[in-house]
Image 1 (cartoon, rainbow, N blue to C red):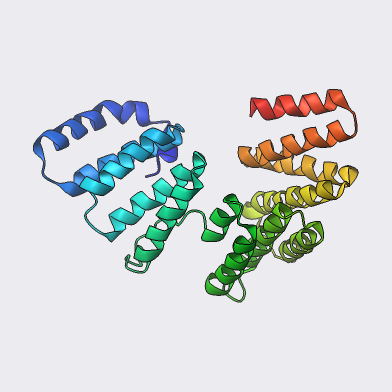
Image 2: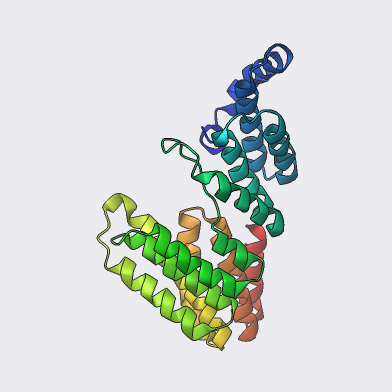
Length: 269
């Protein structure tokens, strides 16, 4: 199980797990058991944001304990996430390439997080044109005809990439396209909050395109809604980004007290 799901009971099982680990490493020849223990340890370090330590554990496990394609892909998935977190995007891209080569060989019954798509990694490297082209290819490959969420994600990503190029007109076109798709979708009560967050996230991205055009007043209400729903679903990265942009908005409007208030909120996050 992901460590995030067992963190509350972890203190109760830690001593037993440490004993098991000691016995396995001292007495067992089982690569499978050692791999599973490595995975647990790496997952804990990733959760605690000790990314360099997680990378060390995963690379060691990949060399010494991974015994099949599934094991390798599990390591690659966690490694790619860790390298993205420490902003070593070149290394993340390299790991992604290794995942691509092995992905079709994994069992269909095994669920492994693919992590960031190649298009997102291109964008992180500043290769925005390649990111746009790759995202269109990914859309054709992986999105089914009636997959509203898939197309909304595609259009939102394209908008983000055009924002990076400071092409606000194109960015706004895709953000509004994504919003219109989601607004037409029938949503069950239990998923209502998620879709409100999704819409608010797109609005936050739309706000950046307005800000890039100099339309600060139009950006502010969209960012406030994004902050509200981001905090509600505990997506702190999204809230942090919007707090930062709100700070810039109020600096531009020469409202220093409000700017400082949002900067303090970002710092607290």
